[in-house]
Length: 214
Image (cartoon, rainbow, N blue to C red):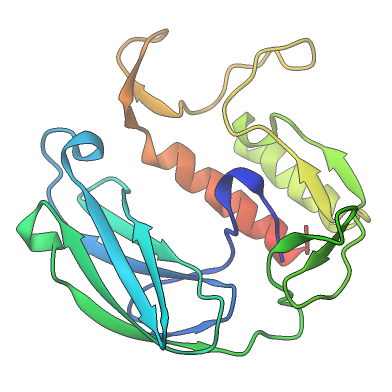
């Protein structure tokens, strides 16, 4: 399992075509909608997931090319139903259900604080961190990212400290291969529009870390 503070528990994703998901894994509701204007600002999208007496509201996001995603991580087994809500009619009122099954042997859930001074997984098994730092690895060329994954696969680490946004500092003088936001010019960006390719690459790399138990 992976703990990544700014992404909550981002683990192996499933689309709405697959209605079964492990406890603590991630289920994606994927919808088609408008791509004109600025969907990041103009479109509001959410879904309410219900199971027994539990109800969870999740905010969706635009993922480029007219694709919208609502990402949900169930924390209890059983059947969950969901209903979407949006200011765009074609995205609102969508319903569905998923079956949350028991976690597999290697899926311990997110990491939590235990007894004030310690960490443990959600299934209450202990977590002893052995960490390293790779601040800018996801902003490097693909070949170097792949090499980093290969190196980490044979290393003893179960925690990685890294940056989400590109960082220019003494140990990194390389321009990122992609920008996090839409380019206006080579040096200016539209901070109201994300670059989905950048974030999809980041998510793919996080999933690779997850498979290695980092």
